[in-house]
Image (cartoon, one colour):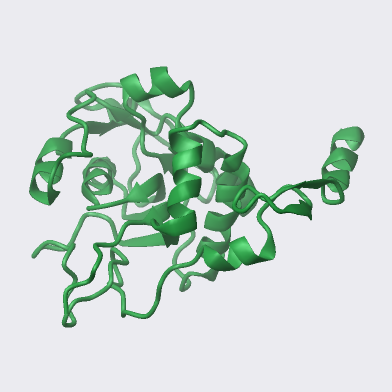
Length: 258
C-alpha cells in the first residue's frame, strides 16, 4: 500500500499529454486552459431544477408538472471540448478519461448550493447492447470514482434496467419520455424487487427499502431528462425521499430562442 501511495504522488510530477489539447504538462489531468474551458455557460439564467437556460423566464425542458428528480448538477455544457471529451470516453472508449471527468464532476458537486448529503450514489444502468460493445458502463465508472472522491457510499446495481428499450438518439422529447417510462426498477427483482436489497441509513441501520434515503444518480449527458426522470420515478417508488441527477454534461438547445 505504501508503494501504491508513493506512485500516486509521483504521477503528479510525470509529464503527460493533456487529454483536451495534447499539450505536455506535469500530472495526469487537464491543463489549466482546458479546465477553464470546461464550464457551464452562465450568460443565460438557468432552470434551478434541470439547469437548462431559461427562455423568457421559463424553462423549455421542464414539463408542466415538476420532474421526479429534485435537481441537476452538471460539470459542463455538452459542447466544444466537453462534447469531445465525452465522445472520446463513451464512443472511442478512452477509459483513462474516467478519472479526469470524475474530477470535474466532483468539483461541480462541491461548488453546488448546499443540500442534504446523498446516502447513496447509483449510476444509470447501461443498455445491454452498449455494454457488450464497449466492455464497460460509462456512468458506472464515473460513479465508482466519484464516490471515492466525495466519500460517499455507492451501488453499481442499485437500479436495474428491465429492458433495453429504443435508442434515444433519433427521438424527440415526447418520444424519449414515453420510451424511457417503466424501463427501470430498484433492486434485483421485478415487482417488489426493492425489498430484496439491503441499504444502510446514515445511522448505520440496514433496511430493505429506500424509505427516507437520498440518492444521487450518475449519468454522462443530460439531453431531455427522460432517462433521469424514469430512474427517479423508480427510486421514489422504492421510498427515496430525494433524488438528484449528477451528470458530466448538460446538452443545451442552440441557438437559444429569444
